[in-house]
Structure formats: C-alpha cells, structure tokens
Length: 397
Ligand code: CA
Image (cartoon, rainbow, N blue to C red; front, side, top):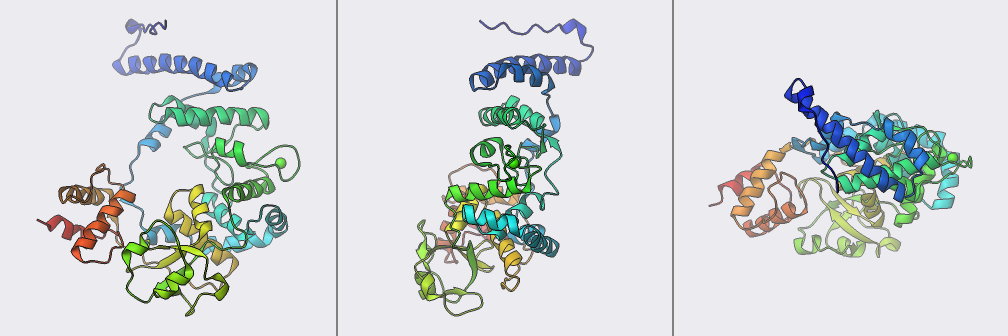
C-alpha cells in the first residue's frame, strides 16, 4: 500500500508555503513512479541517477499549455506572418548555400530541396529560433501535469533515451518539448532522425545535414512524392457543386477543369497531369484565394495538422524555388475571435445544425454546421464564418 506523504503543517508559515511544500512532496512521489516507468522502458538506472535530481517544474510551461488564443488565425494574417518577403529572400539564399548537401539528400530521400528549406523557414526561421526553454524540464513539467500526462510521459522517456544514446547535452526548445532545426518531438526524433554527416550521432540541433536529412526521411516515410508539387493556386470560373467540393475523396484535375477550376495563369492544366487527384481548399471562403491540393499537401498535414500551415509550406516553397510563380497574396481579412466562434456554435446548436462542444474552436464540425446552415439559407457552402454570416445566424428565429 502507498502511504500518503506526511506534510508537517506546523512548519509552513503561510497557506501558499504549505501548498508549495505539498507540491514538492507530490513531485517527488511522481519522480519515483516515473523512475520505475522509465527503467522498465529501457532507460538505464545509472543514467536516471544522474538526471532525476536535475528535473524541475517550470510553471511558465503550464501557463503556455493552458493559454487559449483570443482569435482564430485568419489565413491573411497567418500568411503575412509566415511568408514575409524577408523570409522568402532568406529561403532563396539558404537554398543556394546548402544546395550540394540538399541535392544528395534529394537523391536519397526523393524530397525536393525547396520543400526542406520551406519547412526549415516555418519551423525555426532557418534555425534562428529553435526555442529557449529547457527541453528536459518542459517535458518533465508536462509529464507531471495531469492534462496530457500519458502523451508527455512517453515523450519524456523518449527524450531521456535520446540524450543517453546520442550523447547530446540537454537541449533547449519550445515549451511543448519540440527541439532542433525542425522542432521534432522526441518520439518523432526516435522514429525518423538520421545521421547524414556520418559522425555516428543523430544531431538535429548542430548538424544541418542531419537535420535536413531527418526532415526528408520523415516526409519520405510518410509517402512524399518527389516528382510532384504540393498543389497550386487556382481560380474559380463557374459556380461549384458544393456536395462535390466537400466530398471526402479527392477528384482528378480533369474533373476540376470541367467545372471551371483553372490554373491562375493559364486556361488549362497540363494534359499529362489531368489524372492527378486533388482537393479544393478555400481558406477564406468562396470570396478568397482558392487552391487545389495534391497528395503532398496531405503529407505536410501529417507533419502539422493545420491547413494554414500546409498552405504556407507550399506557397513558401514555390516562392523560394520559382520566383515567377504567381500568387494572389491574401488580404488580412477580418479578425474572428474565439468568442465569435462560441456565439456561432451556440446559435447553430439552437438551430439544430451543431451538437458538439461550445469551445470557440473553428474545427471540422463547426465548419460542417456552418455549411449546413449556408445550404439552407441558399448561400455558397464554403463553410467559412464571417461577421456578417454570424449576424445572420444570430438573427435567425
Ligand atoms: Ca551526425
């Protein structure tokens, strides 16, 4: 049987001090049970002897984890933030500078160099912002915290194995435990990192060949097609059949072309590409820019499950490698707050279109509810929430 830790209440002078002491006792108890788990997962006892006393809690990490965004990221703002002219210019310089090693990596992993550079630019601004938080303690804090304990315990154990086996000093990274040039989580590192420079260690922090090849290996193993692009910007020249647009399976370019979805700068897709499957993406609704996304787009979303991120990788890669690629830079757009999304969710629930959580997050189910409402109201069913649409939904009797 476990005994409850005995806390000597008489010795703490304030309630806050007592709370702190109780947490220390609880953290020590957690360390003991974590030690058992780490040992049974293969971390050696002598390594744990050395590292356990160094493990500490970082309260700021929990604050970051709890923080709710005030606004939903809009495409225009996101693109303006992530694909600045400066970042495009630096990307072109980096592509030129690292071309020899990237060519070797492309030959081995079949991932085009400009995509590696685009991921690098988005993840850490080409290595400049790898994060300043002690990764060991960020992971310790999140593994101790109850919200996502199972997930982060696995990441922490993976991280301990990495620093033990790769003989790396303790990294700094993001508050969520991602580190290195491409911000890999420890389990991602374990599964996909490679030693490309041949020094016997996988070092995604200090060795660019290792970092580039690790990113390429990840993409390649996810199914990246080195002979294809991510997708392309298109223009809509006819009204769309919305049921087809939102059907889960992609449709060949020949279908889209027949329905008036055309390349930005031409009146037809190349004949040999007409069988390529594609999905239509409208990040700002029917009034904004439109994109057809190919298979590699889904691979980018395996890396980061955000359509905006995937579009940014594709658009940045295009601008880095092909400065002549036309693109309609999206306007900033109106800000949609999480409060507005909550209001929309409440009213869509009231009207019978939505039956999930009122959480202020504009996810798949909220989008589906917006589309259902738009269908009934005779509007284009792009599933995009604007202020005027919200007003209309609120005023529905
Ligand atoms: Ca290496």
